[in-house]
Image 1 (cartoon, rainbow, N blue to C red):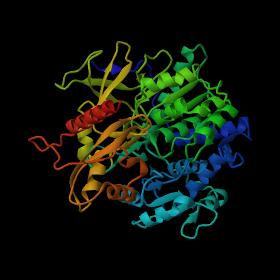
Image 2: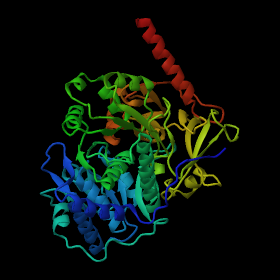
Image 3: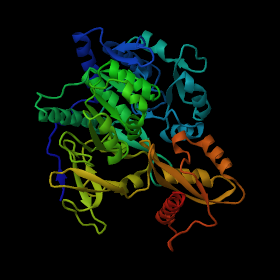
Image 4: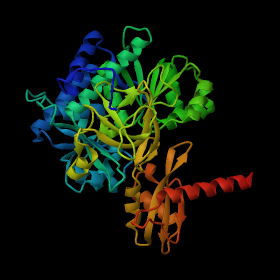
Length: 539
């Protein structure tokens, strides 16, 4: 059967940046001094809601006056800050498409995204400028947040001095025009650009507003009450981080930005600002559950932690709840291809469930034989909703294969649901490795390894890991190269989270099926069995 959300939401009538910029003026009218953002390092480095609006429109005017047109792609590589948000809002107000890139990316990875996305302009910050400049093989224009940049235009000079043009905001078509081109690791080949339209992103925002409102009413309140402060530490280039900061901005919440995660700083700010809710990935929850410094801080104001990006084990949930029994932990389910999510949980959600469908979202579960599954029957999850992407950038055949004739998108995840529509993730049919909530494609790692002249064959699998969720392990057939050389080779070419933390195993041959498919499951199972036996023998 097709399962439908019990909640309905209105269809979007305007893009998200128009809504947010208008609400920024409303928040300014209520409290002209209220900060929209400030840094966890220096709270004097902050901006008001009106400054967010004014800077965004100034930047949009500069884009238009300098010849950038609707549909042009802007690659954004920057740590968490208000500059990141202003770049997005300014780009969208000029009709540009934002393609966020990880600050962890190597020159090699940045060059790939620049070339594949056909980006015409890059916005970055001084600490990343050297890497960006080396990767800029296409000659894209560079804007940099810095006080002293000779090789790039100065971001701050533009947002504070550029006069706002009557040409902005540039009108966009909700259904057809893109807002984001985020790159997602697939199981086949290199990362692919996920095409999200203005309608996709606005629909996701509306669905969250309705879902949160419904959840708060279930607690006996009149509706959703946005928190006064939030910690913005999830990377803004990641789907969770970007949507989270836009949702909070829309709600008038003051956000405290962290460039890099630091547990002690996080706990101190949670205490000092009486923060009531936290969005996190499982590794952060694990760090909180296990760190002795947790007891040094008063977290009595913290009521809820929402997690996503990777499954959160019940063991970790139990550990944290022993230390913070008053805190509710909620999981969600989503992916970049869904703008943010299809499911989020709320109070009353069964243990281990990722919750129920977001408003206007539908799902079906398909068995291995192609049968439509009912409650408690396992199968692959397919999702349909206004937040689901248009397709993959410049890959029409791959996009076509991902959707069925009814418009449902294949997720590759094995699930079941109960009579109330609560969904439980059982396994992943696809082979993506989730390291600290970040997607790692085994095929991307294999392609990089196979480019080494000394490596003749290889395959990469994901191993379970207490801290990171999963880590990549490589099985390699090589002529004459050692483990140290391979790690150094990967370090030069790929971001730290893609490194082979699971180790390297040298083999004489990689086993394959008669049709030529690598027997990854057998290799992984054999390896885990050996590790278990070794552990037993040491006891």
